[in-house]
Image (tube, rainbow, N blue to C red; front, side):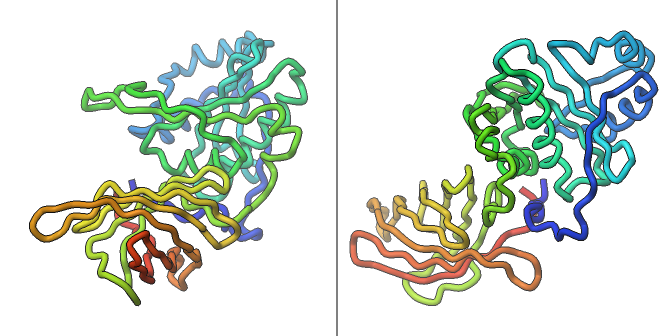
Length: 305
């Protein structure tokens, strides 16, 4: 999957008008069409039959105390749907499908926010809204992050893939206390690095970092980065991102000539900024416990993962 542009930076003039309405029987045809068009190897289709779905919607099967189905309207046109199940319990689970033609414009984030506002207001006993994303579905993970949901679990071997192998899913949740605090509508709190990959662009000071490739995970302000280079492996850093500044500590294993290895620990400060071509870059200054230090620039990689 190709890396996606940072959806948090969508210009206000390009943000669509998004609202939800109850699905009705007449919606069955386009819902089936969107389900097929939006399906990917990372988010399979429901496999509905139009007539059966229309009958279920007409009978109120998807408008009960336990489950609800929503049409996602974007600029007045139906462009997706959202299903919420388990409303009779303390935990409810959401599934969202958005038409490919409106992706990347903040629609998914706004859908999650509106689902939270409606269902927490309408169901006093509801404590948590949850959802899942395939471990490789970075765009959906970024949507959850942007809407204030937090990753709570990794379900190993939870979904079967086309090749017969099983992959993990990540579980996200927004709690009632999160919602009451307005966490789902905090707006743009800074850069979202989640799922992005960076490679060395320039080493201004310190030892070369040939072949370095870094992959970021982010939850709110907490950031983890896993990295490797030609003679560096099993590297991981963890830190806090405040605005455009990431302060972190790191540990990795280095291989030396002759085959010996040792472990390096240290700390650093990385400044995040956007280039004219739209890519993010990381200006990183670091030092380790052996007295080494350096300064390098890493740039976002847009190649397929």
